[in-house]
Image 1 (tube, rainbow, N blue to C red):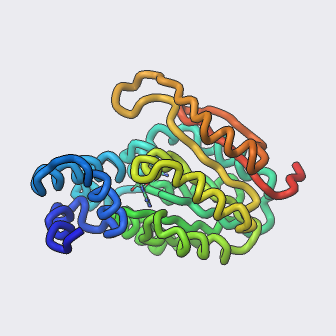
Image 2 (image 1 turned 30 degrees about the vertical axis):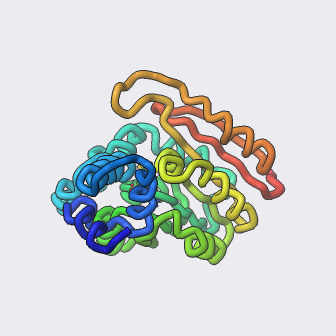
Length: 263
Ligand SMILES: C[S@@+](CC[C@H](N)C(=O)[O-])C[C@H]1O[C@@H](n2cnc3c(N)ncnc32)[C@H](O)[C@@H]1O
């Protein structure tokens, strides 16, 4: 992809900080279609808008003076989860106990870093590391962490920068748990079966648990379509041990491990 084209695509503020690797991947996905550059740029932007969170960048900037609760209730994914946070986190974390420091690595973290207070309220000692492609979400979350003296950081990276992300996961101290909440659709849109490749690579990262979630209802139509995800579930059965599987607030959580799991 020419630099000129990249510059044109990211000229809009909401896209300005999406890593070039991801933009290029989307650009290449329209390669075979007979489109002139202007049409192709429009298609790339439309897809970027769907994949990266579904709200405009300018809106994020006005989040600056908002409380964590207000922000969680603004972002689509966290809004739907808001009433269930305590129940979900307790269910996911209870096996770790509350005395030890626990590393949470949140991949495609969106606005989820703003839910840190729920860990505190439940009594967990959490160090939070997020990875997010949308720069403005990264900045606003890091500002929130700094202002509230929270042990957390979000890195501005794409999950397609696999080696770097895996290295970061490997480096994190145990016990550690990886969250991949509502992000696999974005990954699969850009590269089919990338989730599986990615999971293969984190198999030996020492993660005690990995949690994948996805919506059981359509984002737009609010109509239940019960995604089967057989490809994912079969892969997990073959390569990991599924230790929990539950649905809350229209979101299904698959929890798995490749460690010898002692409940
Ligand atoms: C539907 S939102 C979910 C956010 C968060 N995990 C949650 O459930 O609250 C998907 C997030 O993944 C991010 N994302 C999508 N593709 C990504 C990639 N390749 N690398 C890093 N982040 C990505 C988007 O920008 C967006 O913030």
